[in-house]
Image 1 (cartoon, one colour):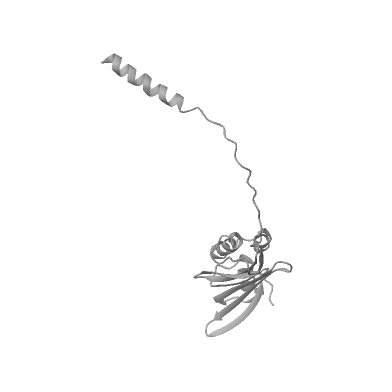
Image 2: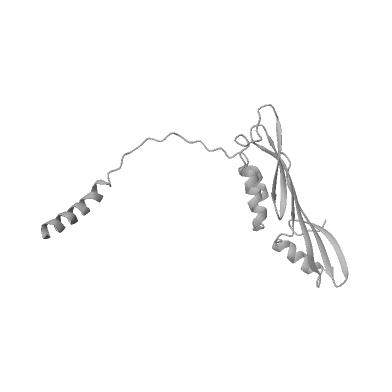
Length: 169
């Protein structure tokens, strides 16, 4: 019985030794193209954006037009809409999948600190009750970000517009 158990232990220890032999394999070359990096670079700023906004912007930048159900060789431009409960983005792509422009609209998102601080300084005692974040992006012109806010103080209300830096428009 001892010989049998000793044999099983030796066999159990010897088996994993043979599984350590690795075969080297030559992999094919992979080329990664970042076609919409300009959009993500201009959309991201130093301050952390709201999570739903960032999520949808990444979906737009990573959208693979050529492998989508909408792709057809005969069209020169495609307009694709992306939706979530907090907002939407309409994105225009060329036939190669390059992002040409976007129109973005988000409601009631977490505002940037610069916006909140600017409102608190200029309008003390007022509360932001509604907000809308609007973004337009053009491949050649860049990005334009704007906030529309509704402020309330008691039964008084006020509507203001700001840019992303907290400057009033």
